[in-house]
Length: 102
Figure 1 (cartoon, rainbow, N blue to C red):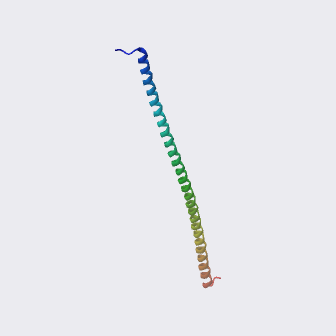
Figure 2: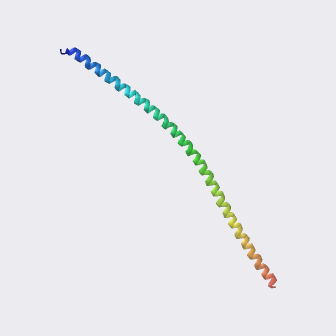
Figure 3: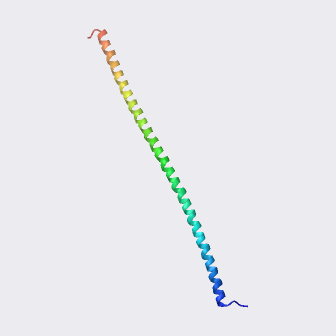
């Protein structure tokens, strides 16, 4: 017994409809997965930005500390030079006084 052309068309239409429904379901599932992944990525990006902000703040603090330490070391060095210069001058003056030159 062969099926009539109408039955074959109806069966083909049902198969096509089932295939279409399955494809639409797969598309919906893919869209849901994309939405979930996008949400996770957005949250991770926010976390990265927050970490970057904290690192930048820490970097600025360290740069300021380094600048202050460098400045203090420079000032100490200058103070040491002045002290040394005064010390040499004082010794020379004392030498001149003791030798009777002045």
